[in-house]
Length: 397
Length: 143
Image (cartoon, rainbow over all chains, first blue to last red; front, side):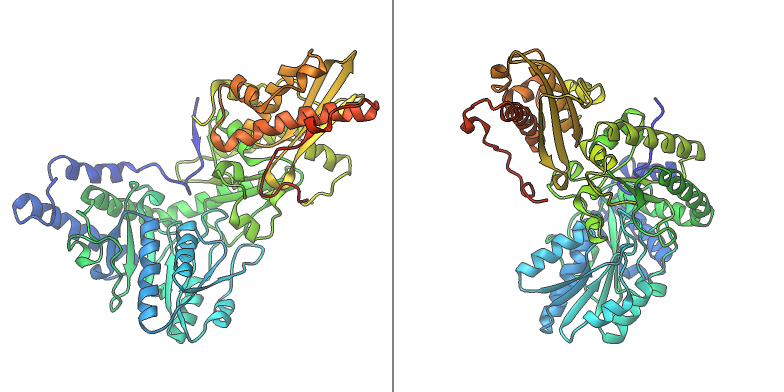
């Protein structure tokens, strides 16, 4: 069976170039960059070059890039760094918003237990916030504002430039989790004006287990993994040279392809949205225009997302859902709840995230398949029967 | 894989799906907010379940549990249907992941609720202690 992979927000297939970029550092150039001998120095040189390439792609200085194990670690380090810097000045208030990734939300919960006060801003119906909301929430003791660049579930883009400007004017640090955005939309840390930015290689066709944190010159990230003096003493552990070189290759490739890929992805995205919107009592989650080029997220009333995913998988379609049953928790997606979807509707969500490897033919097959599966599941759903019989009111018109 | 072959078989080819116009007993359990509702319809003659149908809103294991439970009580006397346990449903499905066990509990309860409905409709006396709902979930009970 032909497999159609449309779960690129979960992870991506590594590109050929990214795989090739790793191989020399797994085979011949396996030295430790901290070693003085030639083998080590070859690795150190590769590490330097990868750091420079990544810095250039982000518009950053080479000294502003810290390698990590991925997006979650970058987010943890960014938040803990800002919290510790704030606490030293008696600032123990942090502002974020409700649709952040759990790497942010759970780190904030931990900081809350340590005595920080956390303000989570409400989002609008499309999942976004305004710079004005941030401005009103900033206090004299605010240490940090952190908002994502793009949402991983519903693809909403946040006004990070405007938020960064507000933060700069108020003298508050600003971090953005750009894990879903780097390599997908053009980003430059100076244009954004952020103090810190997180990224993860496997979201742009690089390897899993490697990421980076940008930290503006003049700020010193806290060390959350103690040990050797790697990453200028801010992150211990022998560097993942193969992963880092591969990440640099993947980022170069992805960033270069943005102008060419964006119109293709946007066209497929919009066709999916139009096709799936033909399903009665369905709704798009997020914005029609202010969203990542490859993200589609819909709710279908009267069905549950896990069964939808399993039946799509049986047709060869790999997708994702915000249903509680797919997460192992009792609650459906916090993002869908934050944009106002009731529990029973949030259980019936479907996320499709495209890459440039997907084709318009696949998009048509997905539309046909989702229509079939939704109808099949509705036919065996007691909720759907009650909705049809008028015993229950439709939430989605 | 998350599910056994048995679960996938009963999920992708569910037995006894549908509703019944002239059911003698209907049991509905679960809550839309939690993400699963199970409804079981019974046709009963001489205390024997001569036909059974179900409709379920829920995940793969909820649909598979409903399908399996209906197979296990079809053609059986009511007394036997009342002895159906969630454990027996899980065993028949060759196991369910730990966080999906509540789906089998719903199936057991849906069967019991349908039998209770039959007893209530026909004024048949029964031991109320046998029909205590054990399903415990953070949201259920709310609407």
